[in-house]
Image 1 (cartoon, rainbow, N blue to C red):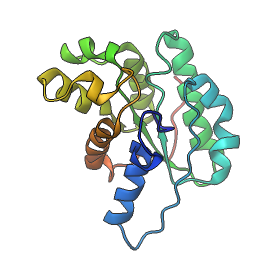
Image 2 (cartoon, rainbow, N blue to C red; image 1 turned 90 degrees about the vertical axis):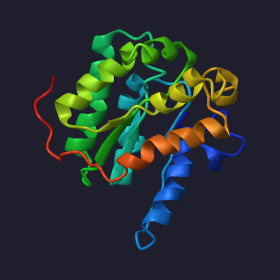
Image 3 (spheres, rainbow, N blue to C red; image 1 turned 90 degrees about the horizontal axis):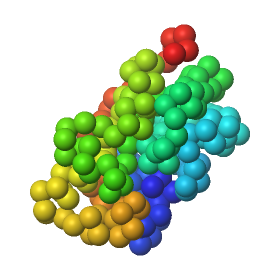
Image 4 (cartoon, one colour; image 1 turned 30 degrees about the vertical axis):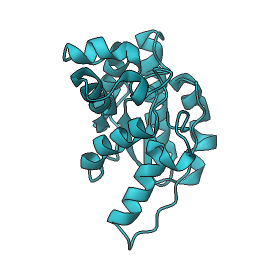
Length: 192
């Protein structure tokens, strides 16, 4: 999702929409977006790539999204990978960036979200977020609300049940807007 698969043009994925929106909200601030996304990969590869593909850029904000691609991975492995990402960013990256976890939607998440609970992988990520004081946005809820209410079909949200259409990505941006001012603490606690 972060790479933009499913959008008609790259500027319609949530990452680019958020970048454009932030520039409009803060016209006196210089924003440089860097896309380190590789579609179809889980947090284990993210942890491996963290320094070379993200940390050395000295970012001020890192958005981490692996809730879909970590699906089916054992909880202990997901927690170790996500914790590896957080600790590299907090301890090794000179800019000590703020971190935001975001969770996207696939059709298989609808039953859990309808029941008012997070799918398992999101629960695993939330354990890391809670331990390290990292804010998170369940963007999946915004899409699920539209689908479950009948205002939007799953196909209109994501033709392949995974990668959002332009309309789906627009919903993700709406979910992100309220959280744009939040940030996370800079000093990490001990490992989980």
